[in-house]
Structure formats: structure tokens, C-alpha cells
Length: 240
Image 1 (cartoon, helix red, strand yellow):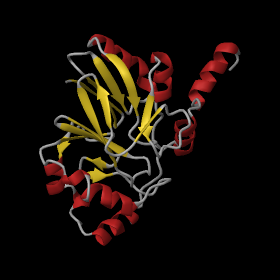
Image 2 (tube, helix red, strand yellow):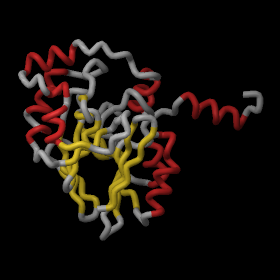
Image 3 (tube, one colour):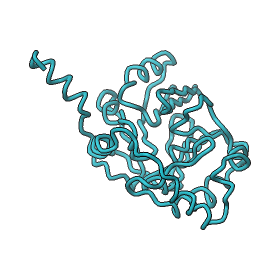
């Protein structure tokens, strides 16, 4: 497997490819790094076949629709995604074939209703469901702490303990963790009874992400962000 982890401001994107067929998939891409993704794929002679979002992001702008237009490939999200531009809607237990690689889909609602994880070979891409030393928050639109408890303790955390965890966010420079490490060390996972975990999630008192309204609007509609609109306007009207 060809693998690239792309970190930018705490957000993580992943390019995975089949070494035999050169087919690839891009997971959780950001709009500011489109050229970087394309450059990495070209360097490794990969052909991106799918662009995938693990959930509807509220803290950054997804590049899935932009890349889908450029590459003529499908946008892939969970069936529960509200975005009308999704071409391929998948559900729990289904498989995305990327050359000889097989991405196994786990529906993991909680952070959002359309959250999913993707397991392939020795690793799992957990989106915002499971982070290194934390979990996704549940106080944003469609978040549900009870659903997150089930997704974690009755789902993801029952996978093989040596499975490598690659989340959609990491702010301390760590590349990955494992299921076993998270079970042993993740503070939020130490309260393993349902009520204690739910109480913890409901009392995090986190600040709202920057640009949450614009991020949700663009990621759910496929529209352009304000910076793109201003740039296009400036190209046509000099005083802009």
C-alpha cells in the first residue's frame, strides 16, 4: 500500500494507493491543498479514483467537490450525508475497492449522524469519531453522545488492539495511535459505563469552531467559500 499523511493546521488528510494497480483514494481533503494532493498523486504515479469525506466537516472546507470536478471521480460519503452533490453513498459493512485494496466501511454516528470510519489492512481512518487522546465532540449539528458511545464501545474499540488509528485531526504532531493505546490511555475512554461517558461528553464546554457557519454551508451545499468568491470577483473587477 502506498500511503501519504498530509497534515495542515491540525487537520489530517490521507492519500492511499494500491501499488499494483496505481489506483488511489483521498480521504478528508481540504480546499487549500488541492494542488498538493494532485502533486503527491502524480509523484507516486497514482490515479485518484475516489474522494472521500468521513463526515460533514464543521471546522474546515472540504475539497471533495472541487477534486471530483477536476478528476471526474465520485464524491463518497455515508448514506446519511445531507450534501446533494455526493455521488456514491455508502453504509455500514460495505466495501470500497481501490485497486486491490479494500476499504471496509463502519458507520460510526455520534460526532455527526453521517460519521464513518474506514478500515484497510493494518489501519483505520477514524475521522472525528476517535482522536488520539480524545474523541469527536457531540455538541455540533446532528451530534449525539449516546450514539458516539455505541459507535466507540460497541464498535471501533472492539477491533484488533494493534490496528493503527489515523484520525482527521491531530494537534500535537503525533502521526498515529492504536486501538490498544487509546483504550489504555485516552482520558475520555476511561469512563466506560454509558452514563458516565455521556455525562462527560455533555459537559465539555468547548468553544465553537472558527467559521462553523460558512464551513457547514459550503460542505453541505457544495458552494464556494467567501475567499473563493472574492478572488473570482477581484479577477473580473479590479477595484475588488
